[in-house]
Image 1: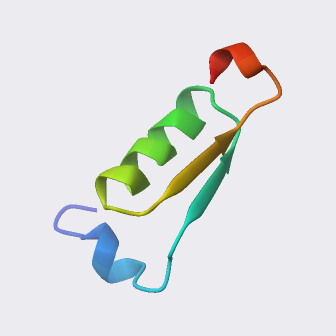
Image 2 (image 1 turned 120 degrees about the vertical axis):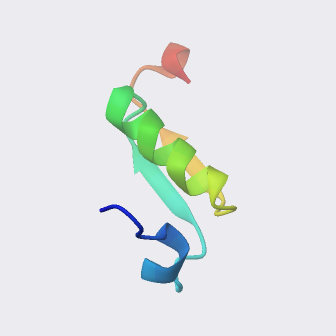
Image 3 (image 1 turned 45 degrees about the horizontal axis):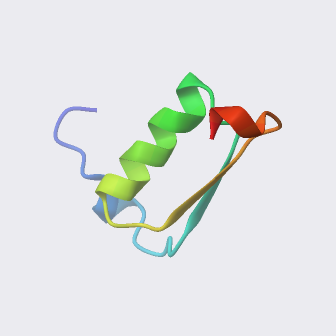
Amino acid sequence: MEGKCLNSDLPNIRKVTCVGAGLIGQGWAIVFALKGIPVTVHDIAEDIL
């Protein structure tokens, strides 16, 4: 994975929804947000949001 750029691999993604705000969901949300892609996170437990 060294040298790969997320933006060049995913040029058509305009927004992302992560279902689950646990460790993995939060991680993906951060990755996309840092690339400037709007992210919505949903979780069954509202207090985790």
